[in-house]
Length: 276
Image (cartoon, rainbow, N blue to C red; front, top):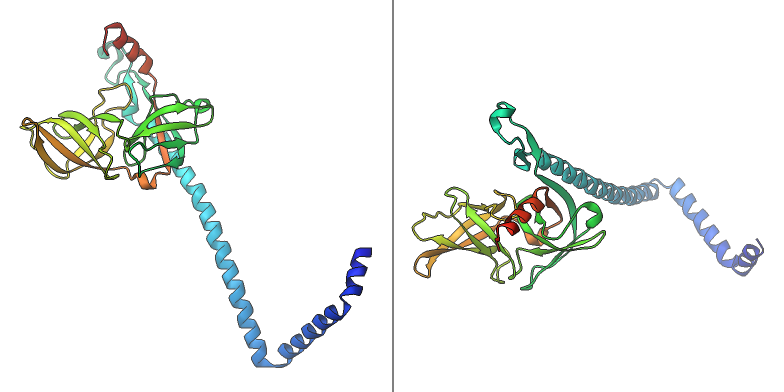
């Protein structure tokens, strides 16, 4: 209180001037229609500007919540797809026409918190880790297609080796004919990759879909990779196929990490029979 009194005493001339100016302006605006109209319009414009900004901010925050809810809904729908299940009954005829189905794949939602696309050895970081069920060598996809493979995991975060990394190769196939090969990125265009080992007698068409082959314990079969844009013969007997990637790595925001509930069983069997 003492400080307030001292402030008033030290600045009483300035405060008196402001008070008189304010009183004069109020009297002018109250007693003159033109000035009153101008003041009202200015006030309305300022109020409208502030309300517009508040509304835009509210819509943006609501959009974030909507995207989060949509991502979760997509996860639930993916988990209910028939491709996420397998027949667990030893003999189908023993279980009746429908068989007995058990879940094979579980989709874990995650958000991209770091990403690069302009290097030869790009990387991605996610906001989910071991506490959320994520482990190394799990597949990562977006709503559009293949993204990469989990390489490192901490309690709350994980790192991903993306398709845009020259160290990664993914077994992929032509969706229509079923011929498969190895897909890799050559380190140049972040929108395109190359599919090799497709025999030259196979008929190719621009626009044909390329999907994951399922010939690994990482990616399920049939995940979209991209579409054919060009192809040429190499080595005399095979096609080198240019594939436009379906996932836009420049806009990655939300992804899904795929947990294969039968992965350990498959790996143990392959190790037992001596597969490399």
